[in-house]
Length: 246
Image 1 (cartoon, rainbow, N blue to C red):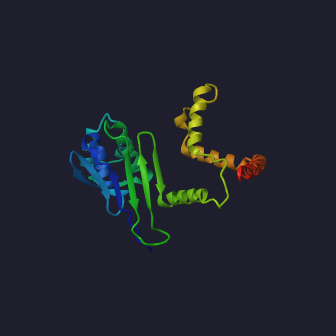
Image 2: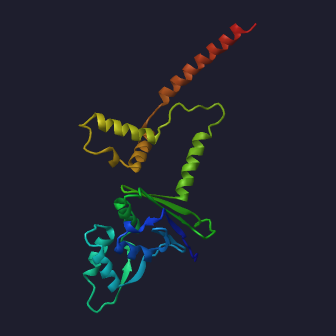
């Protein structure tokens, strides 16, 4: 059985003042951390940890010091601390039901200087079924992740679009960026269209819509018309060249 490791780095360095004591306690167990100026650089040589033990005393102290700051970490531990007994000295943490990405997103939302964080992971096993990586972008409003396989599939799709056979010409391309712009225009100009804002329509929604439209749109008539018009223009061009030749 392959022993997969996922070295991971979080960038940029997070200022100390942006992290609550509770988030610091949690993130320094999930990741390794090194001081970097007035902040912490988070990374994981093997991979982020989703299970570990915490001192109850440290947890209660960090929880109290983070009171009044709404966060994913506070909500998660508020439920766990109810079950801690008076004689308990340590608590076992299982993060399989939550995600450290949301903890980082809380930090970005509150930060006066950070507008995003990136998390890049790699796989160290040279196996055809396992080698690859992952990139995650975390902003105040979204968490987006793509594997290297996803990125390569996009590259291949673009290559197929660009690699037209000699003599072939693209007349129409349904571009997702253009669809995004059109959504904003439609919502802005027609107040009765929807109660949604343009930001509520995700990239996944747009991609699904483009696939559906491409699948159910028949452009054979337009294609035939283009061929007919091109044939006429080619004849006229040939006539023009003959008439101008000595």
